[in-house]
Image 1 (cartoon, rainbow, N blue to C red):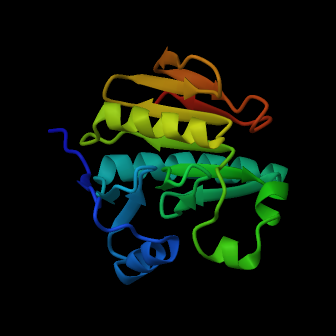
Image 2: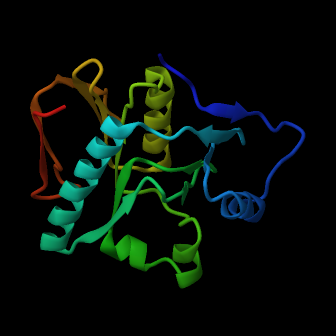
Length: 191
């Protein structure tokens, strides 16, 4: 069964960035995102299989980052204030050390106003594929340099790069961090 996240179109109510932040802080047991159009999205929780896969992806990224010390890794609990006005939470994200360090302590404490360099979205059994593809395009438009949409249901991964057509690979496959995550590779043989 595919479900969509709850999307609230707030045509008559426009939340400021501070109001959106406070809404999230006052409802910590819920996960919120906001589109460039100001739509408020309440994200459903994922099941055990998706949660375990997501943790494995983050662990692989963290291990590589600890070895290279090139940047910062983020979980799906992090909301990024993208330059296009959206507030998004990828399943995993990474930002180059110099870029993240340039933010003020206040900016880092709240929702960092920065597009990650790299994002991963992992499709859960209940995620709508077209919604995730739109989210990936939004990331690219906001300045993300590399993105992977992992789709276990169709045994595929979609690779997003700015200004290029989406590359689709069948699983199993090995992914490279290319020039964004130099030396990082991810073996997707167990998805």
